[in-house]
Structures are given as structure tokens and as C-alpha cells.
Image 1 (cartoon, rainbow over the protein chains, first blue to last red):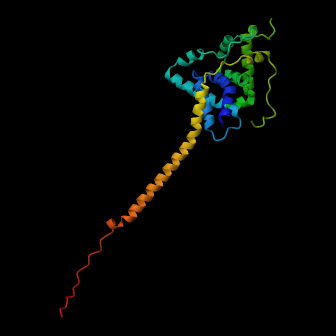
Image 2 (cartoon, rainbow over the protein chains, first blue to last red; image 1 turned 180 degrees about the vertical axis):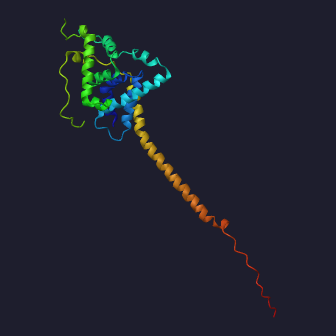
Image 3 (spheres, helix red, strand yellow; image 1 turned 30 degrees about the vertical axis):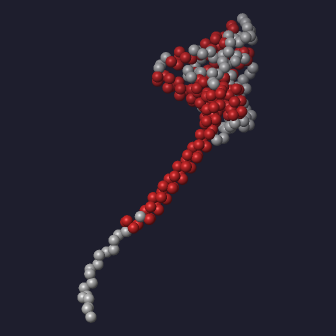
Length: 164
Length: 95
């Protein structure tokens, strides 16, 4: 893989991959960087490059989370909210980044990762299913259920939802 | 990317999902230059290891050949002395 291709991948996917890794660990940048380096080491690029990156980042983030828990029990929880998950929106009618972060953080991890991978990673449910080792239908059910929970939590602040 | 399967699950348009996806993930704190440098080093590592392995293999062959040749040429030191034979019993005749 050439440097231009790698640079393009970093520019396009690093932010979303970092957000994805942040669901588990407090050092998402390290995990994403390691994933890109792992990609460089491959002799041939994987067929499904983006899902492959998400899978490697997921495994790395879970491993990092376990290692961090071994070191210090409270580190992960404290660091998860240390850095912002989203760029604050300039659009006053948009969702509040902090509120969305809190609402997402309240979801179960297996639901949250599907929502993040689909909405910000752009993965299909089939690709997510390969990444998390589940079926596409299950992933979609979790996504829909998670979205309903978010709707309840953000409903009043959702700019496009009808106000009652 | 390979061809995607035809029966993809496509969720219906959801205003909340659209509003959420409009939020930009915070910029990654990855140092791009450092990553590219590390990637360059990684990609060369395989080549360097190949040369190291080749050099090690050739050195091992050279060493083995040297030992073999030494042992072959060292036969004068290890040659077994001729077996001692009993002196000739016939008396010399003085004519």
C-alpha cells in the first residue's frame, strides 16, 4: 500500500474509527494508529478494507480496555468522557454534541457500537455483523432498539422530530 | 471492494438518524506525519528481515562448509597410526 493511499484512508476514516474505538478504551488514537500500521504490514490489502479496519480497531480497543482495567479500574470510565466524541455543531438547530454523547454513553455497549459503526462509520448491517460476529438481522434489531432509546432521550431536542 | 450482496438491510429514513449522522466525530488526535513515518518503517521492515534472514542463512552455510572442510583437511592429526607389527623374525644373513 502506497503512502498516498494510506494518507487518503487516514483522512477519510481516522475520525470515525477513533470515535468507534472510544466506545471501549481511553486511548483510541493509539488503537487506530496500530490498525493502520497493521494494514501496512499486510502483503495484500483485505477485500473488505473498511470493515476490516473496524474489526481490527474493535479488537484492539477491547484489548486495550482490558489492559487498562487491569492497571486501574477507574481509568476507562474517567477517560471516556475526558475528550469530546463529536465536534460541537455550528448549526443552532442541530443536536447538542454533549447531549448526544451522554445519550450514546448510556446505551449498552453492543448497541452503541452498532449505531456508531452505521451512522458515522457508514458500514452496512452485513458489514457490522461480520465485524461483531453476529447476524445482520440481530444488528439491525439492536440498532433500531437503540435508536428508539435515543429518540426518547433526545426527543425534545431532535430538530426534525415533531414536537408534542 | 467486492460486490455487495443484493439483499442488504436498508433501514427506513429516520429523522433522528439523519440528525445524528450530521454530527461530525471529533477530529482524531493521530499525528499523521508520525503515522506515515511509522508506516514507511513498517513496510521496509519486511525487506530488511528478508535480507537479515538471507545473510544469516549464508553465514550458517559458510560456517558449516568451513567446519566440514576443516575436518576433512584435519585428517593428518586424526589419522590413526599404523598398526604395530611384530618385528621380522628371520635373522639377517651376513654373507
